[in-house]
Length: 131
Ligand code: HEC
Image (tube, rainbow, N blue to C red; front, side):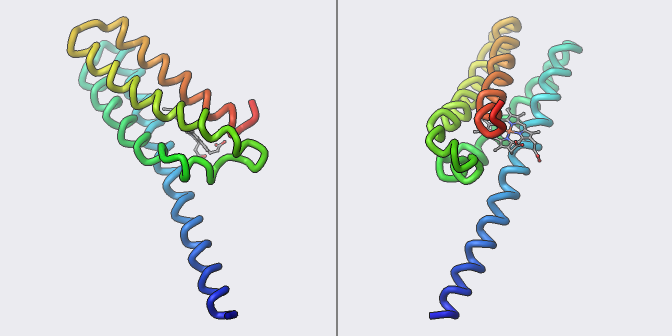
């Protein structure tokens, strides 16, 4: 019995540790992506916008499952997991909207999709950080 407990505790620690890596990895990929998109718009560099948008999509995919997100919400905010999950869904949608608008050369609309992404980042962070 004790060995089983020890084993369970070890597995829990390992899974928590790797889950932490997932959050840090996801956020850092998205941060890079957002920076590239911003630089792309400011400098009129389409390739940077596109590569940034691909990064945001990749990073967001790592942190969009409800179970994963819930692990990072403070105890008193667990009930807001749906709102947090919606922020991740919104980012995914915004990436698509941004890319479609780029294809159409509708750059203002593409830039608006970028702004909406940024709002979605803030939406989830406001929950986690009690902003
Ligand atoms: C579904 C929730 C959620 C969304 C959406 C989200 N984040 Fe985060 N983010 C977190 C959590 C949880 C943390 C860790 C707690 C903290 O830093 O307050 C975090 C932390 C961060 C950090 C600091 C990372 C670190 O290692 O401390 C950065 C940078 C970041 N996010 C960038 C972004 C960007 C850019 C976006 C939007 C493209 C975004 N996040 C969207 C939940 C989210």
